[in-house]
Image 1 (tube, rainbow, N blue to C red):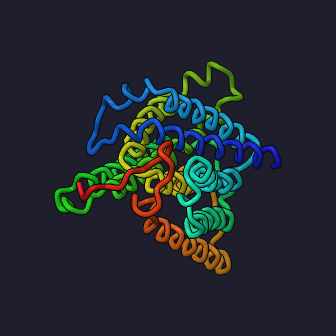
Image 2 (cartoon, helix red, strand yellow):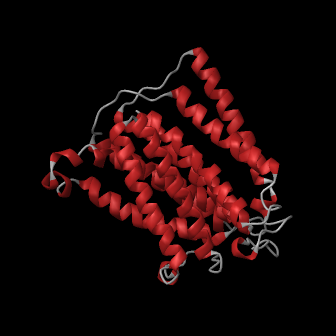
Length: 305
């Protein structure tokens, strides 16, 4: 168990590093719609490539953590990612960049998320999910992601989709995709010990690679769309939540449903919502207020787009 926690902390640090590096690489490539050439421009930037390397390293740590410990232990630990991101923003930016209320909001989100997953404590379940459930999960995930993408360009919101809102929606869509990928990782990790033949003959390897590439493209658009503080909550929150729900749906994991557990889960979610609400009104997410140093500047929007 100790090894799982250490590996999960290392994974969260690597993914936080990846987010910061990718934002630094994408901040001058702002996009307002789908841009298939975005990746081709970003691969020329060393800092963005460093972020990809850190993301791959984080994947390795997460995969190792899941081999040493259950999803219910690993996923709450990954909630530390947001605090690591804020630590980077404090180090790279000016002291006025991240204020005390921003740290409190990030802490509330991380604690609320970790508490919810700890109280729910998914456990048990099977190693492999039936193919019919995987298809259904893929359809539901696709519909949810397409709905969020639709809100970024919806004609009913022509004057409300700001940079920050677009980044938040893309971040939420990316988080859901990463949650689905985490479920695929669980399926894939159960095949690793069966030898190379079992790995290359199983669908999970190819979904992991193909889905990871598409999710990386989506994450790059989220990073380029607006402030990191707007997109990061979607990465941090919806990834473990989606993964946990898919663990119940796909692998038959059981969650605590007694009255004390439900009360604890409700309180944890309330704390999470308070943190999200506070951060969504922060200058870090809106681009207003104190400005960090030029190396990590998230320029304010000149108006709705």
